[in-house]
Image (cartoon, rainbow, N blue to C red; front, side, top):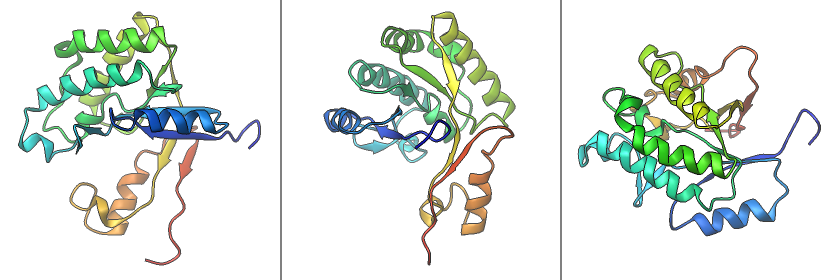
Amino acid sequence: RSEKLLLGIELGLTASSLAKANEIAASHDFDFVLGSVHVMNGREVDDTLYLEQDEREVYRAYLLEAAMLLETADVDAFAHVDYPLRTASAELPYADYRMEFAALFEVLVRRNIVLELNTSRLADEAARANLLAIYHAYRECGGRYVPIACAITAIGLDHMGFLGDTLEEIAGEKAGIIKADTPVVCYPAPVSY
């Protein structure tokens, strides 16, 4: 830990794990805590969820659940505001979710929680335009956002079908988030496969 190397954590937020996440955040001397929502009602928010539920309703519920969780989450930033869109069949425009975003932004601004500027989908033109609309609306509500870093988690076969069929393909897809002049954090790979 130094002036250039800080200690942080990303905590997954769910209704059933919020107290534990807050306990973890409070019991360690973290410089920065990201909160994210990857699971709703015990289900991963991914394309398999869309087989059972309408994508538009999943995104609407995701934004409202995030707002509810962030009311009491002990975090500095909310990560992945567009998480459900990563596996949606099409970009879901900000304009269709103004009320849900307004509720989320009100919580973020009131609690001084920043909105992470995530770089993972900026190469896609439609995603970039939608994210810019989201970030501009957040800013207009009094919010602030910061680029944090690119993070590459462990590379494993658990992402087959989504990122590729081999470790090499998966690694290549994960490396696609690296941007010039942005710090990159990599999770160490196991010594043997």
